[in-house]
Length: 58
Image (cartoon, rainbow, N blue to C red; front, side, top):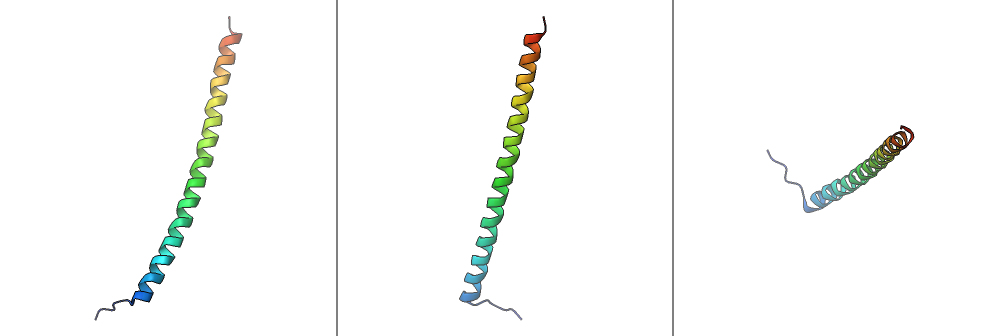
């Protein structure tokens, strides 16, 4: 026995799915941007440290 959902049930399920997907994608993008910013500052610090070390060594 198969239960075919009504159009209202389908639209409600799709709306819930889209809302959940939008939230998940938004959170993932914010996490990714935060991690990339931290990595950028880390690499910048390493680069400046290497340049400073090279400038101080004879």
